Length: 253
Image (cartoon, rainbow, N blue to C red; front, side, top):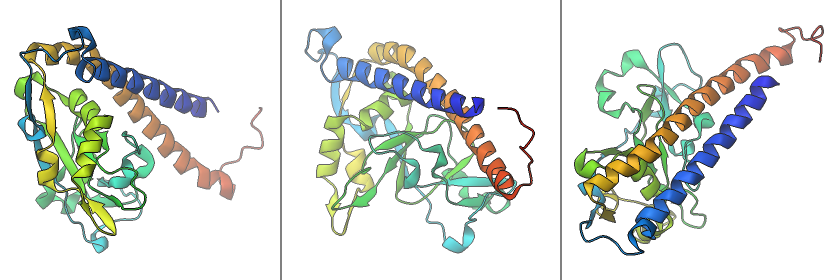
């Protein structure tokens, strides 16, 4: 029960921290509150590709994937890991891939701070198109097709918190979704994503913003790791409890 309470508490902390980060982002880069409500003259207008490198995911064959995790395997990051509105669902893993067969997949390994974007959604129920999640750990996930990887290129002092908050902002998503191709599904092309118009603040502003926001994301990352561990523990213990393999009759409540 204590572990469940801890998991719920960490989820609430993460939600609160992300709401704070989004509010600060909006105040600085949408409403320009610290700058008198006007975009400063030393800021620029540009495209998303000015500040990130973009990569498409790998098209795995279904027969290559595992339905259950094994020792020394990668989790496969799919769109099911991305929340509506943005965020990472650590329990979204449905497929795994053996590391010993991954020599040709090194460029699809994900690292802490990587931004992952949903590139496909249903036309009549657009829920996650363009939304992003942020990776909390190194070398645990491989990137699946129809998820775009946005990785900061180091220019202008912009780092991953800015990109993550930007891509989940209302005005960015409205513009991006308006340029999606339409059919039974709606799809985003890599070109549409990279050419998204953005504001590029002055270098010193980006550094100052990151100094404020990055510590929030470090807490979120640590909580995500702990939540993932607690979830794995629950998933491992529950079948044993249900089968009677673990005797709880003598536990005092």
